[in-house]
Length: 183
Length: 252
Image (tube, rainbow over all chains, first blue to last red):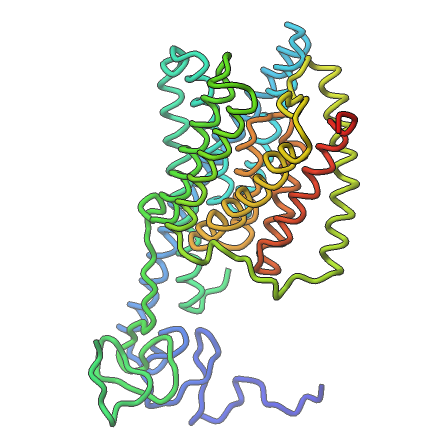
């Protein structure tokens, strides 16, 4: 590839580029048609654009905190199941229960790792697994549904909020991407 | 409805009177975003997630009640036929509710080479799983995994209930409408991951997670890549058929 093209900053003025996203913009256009940046607008408009981005970034931070709580819930569930697996397997010597608890522990920890990449999918999977287990135990022994009910509500609450936030985070990333902000 | 003006250019701003013959994402005159993709902020209010959760927990509740019943409802074989019928009807109702995109029965992307590789791989995998399941059963408990219903039944009954039924209906659900729902909510990776995971836990066999999850992920990936259900259906049939032959082959 020969270097015959001019770098963006040396483009003639009549076909300038947007300083936010580098796409071409003509002087009569106030806003960039690609990212909405007021390239040829006044300071007030530029300030407004910046505040829009700051608001989205602030929201993203809040949402990420909720995702983190969901992830931590999965880590706690994973560790508790793993401990239960070791207890049943080696102390009580009920190997089947031990192996099942151990597998559940690994699944929760695996989902917690996946939640870094796809928080919505990982936390949704975990919530459905958790509810399935609660349902299974409740049908086997109805009284179990009330055991540790506060913990159950807390776990479900953290997971639901994490799912909502994971979904929201993706929308915010998309909107920031449209505004020409790269992450 | 937009009135058709003969002088109007192809792309108009939704907020001001700006129009252009070139597409734009943001209006160059007022800065408003042109393409409004309303994001539903709460996924639990979207019909895709509601439909997914409703399908999963209705089927799951029914399956759990069946699995934990100590006595037969009618008889061993009759119960299996009843369960398959009820679950099949639930699958069909949700598939129809989710529209014709659930029924991806096109043959266009069915190619001999990937299909052959898939089937060879699944036959080998079936032998490994069968060996592993036997090992786990012998070492962990009696009859935890063993499915007794096939014993003493004619081959065609077992093939219909254990091979054809799951191949068609489970694929229609997990690789049909569930994966579509998940795609509408999120991206392809999430759709493959979650549908494979739900497929694995729907079998209510905790040890089985070890081999059901990879199979679910593989079928989901093939469904997304080739946009047809046939890899899943054929693969699922062949895999279940080989497992059936290994477990019960001597009786036929």
